[in-house]
Each structure stands twice: as C-alpha cells, then as structure tokens.
Length: 103
Image (cartoon, rainbow, N blue to C red):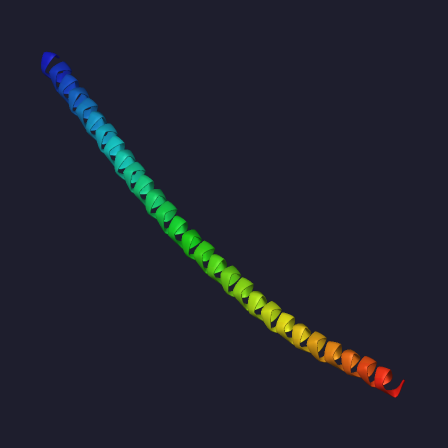
C-alpha cells in the first residue's frame, strides 16, 4: 500500500507543480498584455495629441489668414471712402465757389 500512496503523492505533487506553472504562465501573459495595452494607450495618446496640435495649428493659421484678409478689405474700403470723401468735398467747394461767383 505504501507504493500506491507514494505514487499518489507523486502525482499530487506533479499536479501541484503543473498548476503553479500554469498560474505563473497566466500571470506572465497578464503582465505581457497589460504592458502591451499600456504601450498602445501611450502611442494612441501621443498620436491623438499630435493630431490635435495639427488641427489647432491649422485653425490658428486659418484665423490669421482670415484676419489678414479682413484687414486688407477694410483698408481698401477705407481708401475708397477717403477718395470718395475728397471728391465730394471738392465738388461741394466748387459748387459753393460757383454760387458765390454767380452771386
């Protein structure tokens, strides 16, 4: 009976070692995939940050271009109004002078 008990004990020890090995492999896999997930998350965060920076820069450039365009349009309109004002002023002065001369 002793050899049977020894054999059963040996089988139990082998099963225990096998279970411990499996648990260790599972823990190693959990760690490996947790590391991969952390790396993926970091890469995704960096990629997202870079894309957001590009979008912000494009938006900023677009705003600057629009502001510059509006400034140029404003300057052109201001010049047109000043020219028109001077012409009207000259016409009024000529009309007043003509009326004074006519008496």
